[in-house]
Length: 188
Image (cartoon, rainbow, N blue to C red; front, side, top):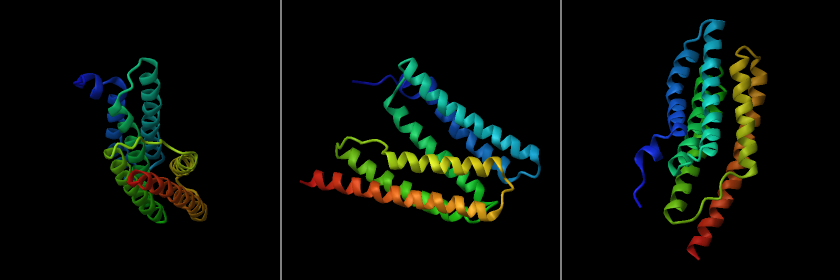
């Protein structure tokens, strides 16, 4: 059955997902070049628009029956790109965030490859687990703190980053165990 391209790729929720991704280069430029409180406030506003569009795309998709297979892929990818862009921007101000960014990129790349491998083999995805949701919530909270309070002490930034890295490593290990189990079942 052929999919309606407009309905699948150009639905309002998916357009909001594209918008969210397109906001990120603008945010990066504004944040990295910020030299005044006004610039930082503009960066916060841009990310607020991104978060608002993320909230609205899901609400609209469910409320108006606009959930698409592509949207189910686009939304989490936009989430991860947003997290990565935030982490990248903070490396310019707080070098310790570079370690967090490296762990984040490795985790997401490995999970993406393993997830695609399983999907291509016809294994249904199990979705996000509680440890993944906790890790994401902690990362989002830390990113929000760094965004809103751009002049916090470096020791506090280090503690935030360390907590995020530990949560990410634990979540990554638990997801690897899940993928290992699924691949093992696939081979049997």
